[in-house]
Length: 132
Image (cartoon, rainbow, N blue to C red; front, side, top):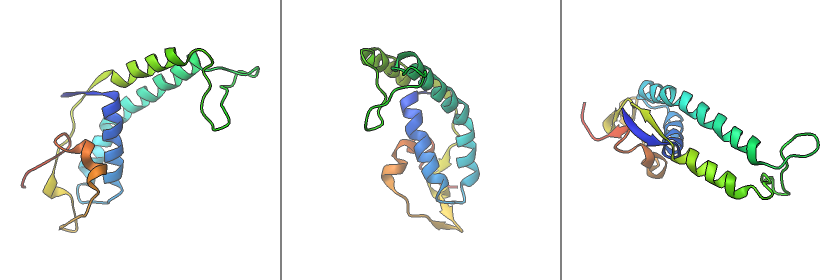
């Protein structure tokens, strides 16, 4: 198992989602990795929601107030909310990823052109150099 910050896990998830959309022959390993981090992401989202509920300004109806551009209003509690988010983002979780060899990312036996920026969070963590 390796340790990752929540903020890194979010980037890894985005890379896995991108890779899953490419319909490669490595779909099973990609799916297994998504399945491994799903409970951690659900927990992260629940904690994120708790921060909003605790620090956001609320109207008379109890709903969170949002500004003209849709941003949540914190009226005087923005610093406290930022500290809570920083703590949540930097929280460390343990994950053991199923590694995918770079040459396994094929489609019908041919290399698939991929966007390096989208895959950067996966390099040397999920996607590794290697040969079958």
